[in-house]
Length: 351
Image 1: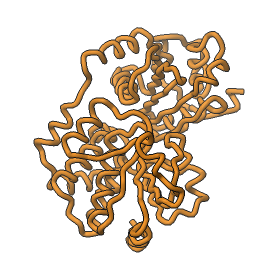
Image 2: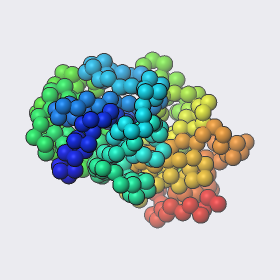
Image 3: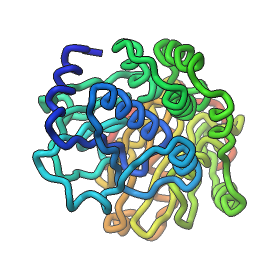
Image 4: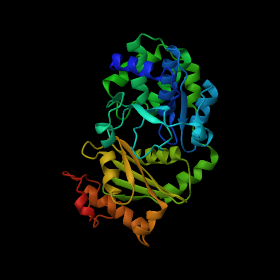
């Protein structure tokens, strides 16, 4: 953390309307880190507004907001009142990252744990903190510690929940910093409220989503790929991808959801030689957008591009990922489970 630049950011925003914008359809990590950052700003006498685009998850996000009184506003609620001179701080995302709506206002800062996008590399942000850690809540928790501000029990609980959710209880993308911030937050968090948050799970109607994914799964070598033929929340698509990854035979999971506005992808990888973010970005080149971490990533193809997939959409998508991973199409479902030794991402293979 560059404390002097952070103080400069605080002073710059002091006499301006300021928004903390998460990625679209914010998850617990995005909500938690935005909530924590707002608490820091309030410590210095500012009161930024947390905003987002898309629908909130009906279970995890709603439970967090209700339990801790977190105020967040959708674009539909505030877009008309936002002005270009207003300040926007992107958190758990970056401008032009593909998962954030361009809103009225000027992006002056970015705080994120995803790989840096081209715009962030070239844009002269007033404040930029992009680090490779397991959770954006880890970064914000570090701010409290470095600034000498002790977070309240509720703030620590929210940050700890976001940290645990984005690292899947410390089973993916974990760094030394994540572990240090876990220890720091754990001493301050409300254990009962944390358990209450973690009790969030699926509801009865979600079982049909799992059923559809199970019925539509195909296994090619070490990759499991499936689709859900009806709309469902982003968080549920991610949960299904995690579920498929729990299969002994699967080291890379790809799940996509068929929606009126296109296809939503969720990708997981536990192989060191398969970066989920690189995989989805390459697979959707020329069709949509995608990206993320080495262990988890996501992407989209808009409805107007679906015709390019041809009449056999499932076969097209399967082949797309298999070519990128170097998996031969002669190895069909449930055949060889021995991983390939030299996987290369070659976008030329798609042409």
